[in-house]
Length: 158
Length: 89
Length: 121
Image 1 (tube, each protein chain N blue to C red):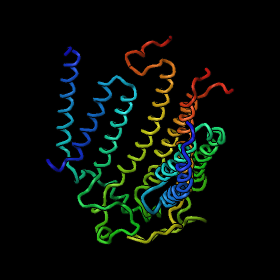
Image 2 (image 1 turned 60 degrees about the vertical axis):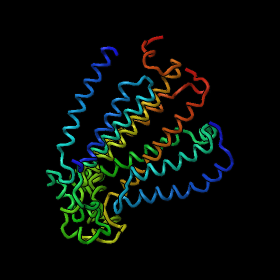
Image 3 (image 1 turned 180 degrees about the horizontal axis):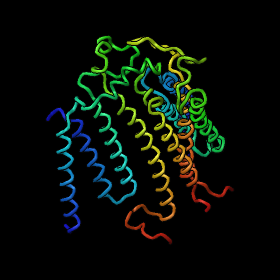
Image 4 (image 1 turned 90 degrees about the horizontal axis):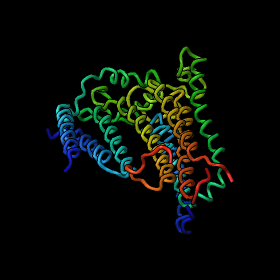
């Protein structure tokens, strides 16, 4: 795929930060509003794919190497499993929520009933949300990048 | 029309009648057994400290299914990269 | 009978998808049919957990008369969590199917199902 015209490139440069901020907002507030890791990761990945469509896949494939992007995905998966194993070490069982009442970071329990949104609650859940969000962003972007580059070659070497 | 087409159309319509009969017998708006969901809604804020009922099911009460789903995403990405691997110039 | 419209819509979607898988000859049209079947099944999972006049099961600034009679006026949250997993599985399977179709097209030169038969050329 080749580059698109200058109007398309300029507009996608302008709207890219807004889409990424909205995607990271949906990931970060997963324990208070509807949303979470998978939904926010899909929104942010579609923002990155919009840049890929505007700048052409041959140019992007030479700047960003796939082997460096897969490090991000592995970091996300290892973070998710590492948090689950910390629950096994500190409590008694796998996936234990060890930060709810006796922890450092997210340890406030909200009052029962309808409350206002407080960010410091819900134990282990925001850490797991970030790990899954990074994994989904990297995974979806790598899939579209590899498929777009492979469809633009005239012939493949076997 | 050949015999294959007639047999395919007859089996299709029989299957459609089974599905439509089941869809008309279900009750929309009154689910039958709701004890597990009532327990989860009442005890969410006390046990896990989360305001949202859906996220705590995905990551806390049923976190093992999310682990399986992350494995499926990883397998799909590695499968796509492996199909398009070629000798580099 | 007029109140069962979401279930009738699920049946219509599954049958459109089944027709596209069974009676078409292009590979891309079959993949579109499989994706329509998956959308129909996700819709069925969500409409199983609806309560009459219920609100979303989230306590952040919830309306106060929904919190007073608490589990009876909220929609069931478990089918929504299972639908999330099902959507992600559908995306993963669709990505693998499309990359295999690209590989088949580069090897055979055509996308007609009747002409792609031999294993070794």
